[in-house]
Length: 357
Image (tube, rainbow, N blue to C red):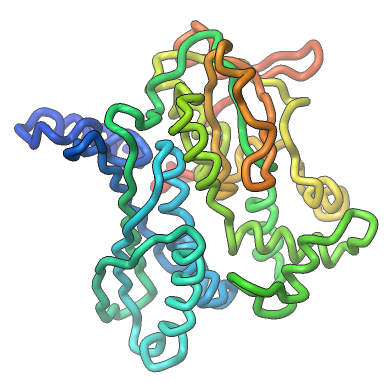
């Protein structure tokens, strides 16, 4: 039994029991949807980050870990088309983490991102662990009643879009694994450090080290697409949506499974990260493979009905979108095309408890 089969079993067990009629959508999407009064639905999402599974303390500055702990949950609320408002954050720390500055720097990074999006820390818990850090991030948001964008709404003929660029976070992880490190602690908010300024420089000004530093930040300091999520949800532009946490090949499969549909995407349309393309030849990184299967880009993948395509903005918060392909009638068939060649796109993203080969 893999991670997703286990979740599906829990979903079946939960749905077979009596529960509150206010739960509109439970297990199976990026966040639960709970009906509220006054025409609002509540969104609730939760994420676990486990040391040496989701991050390594020796390679992740505490400020950036605090930032990312909130970012991954904000991305889920964005994927539902909602506005985030409240957070509950629990952390288990070993004694050495408690006695150092780790906890203070961790929450400094968390609050920097929370302030950016007006999210209030409303509670949580702190505990001691005997080995390793455990982080539980819960974020609550809201949408108008019935307006949440679920994974299950895509229909044949809908156009498939993605925000931003793909593959950068996975490349950053590969670079960390071969020994690359941030040259200095980057800013999480406010003024830019030299590391952050490298990410803002033009391609003509950039060195290979600038590109490496930017890719490390793509992995360690992801940017949740909250603005895009709000626009797509409140303007009723997206018929289905998911955030790219496990990788496009896996997350597109999740969306199509819930929508009982298939998809055909164009390899040439993939918005490959320019820094990945710059460095791949010298570091054995395949940009297309990283874009398709690399996780933690936290971009939004969404479907749009043809009649709504003309209403799509070109950019939100300076972030553009790319048309990848379209939803098809063929249930469960995810295909990718490159020129005259076409093949099945099998889920290749990250999976907990995957069988070892």
